[in-house]
Length: 160
Figure 1: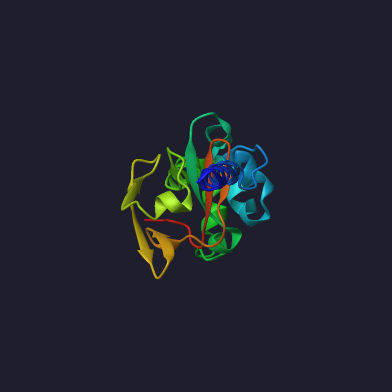
Figure 2: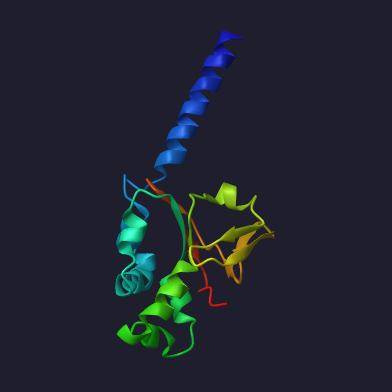
């Protein structure tokens, strides 16, 4: 009986450590996005909109981060137009559609029916054939947990 309790305690400690670490090396969400090669376009857009501080602060956030491949699916010229200084408000609105003001790992997301973004929009969350879908995008790959939240890779830009 004592051995079972010891093993159970060891398992709980190791699970807690794995959940809090998960490969972010003490980085904040904004640092993860700027250092992960999957998100170079998203990082460039975050910088152009002046939102990096939002993702590197102490507030918990989940970033539904479109990968570079997701941005490549946008109609030709869309990204270039959004990155122009005169379209900063539109770019900021698009990016805030991809940020949730709480830390949600994939386990937590599977139990959500919707999430509310920093832009004030409610996005539907579905579990379809084992894949998590948020609006018209699918989580495509492994999440990265950070000290202030999580980064979830998306296969599409949520344009609404």
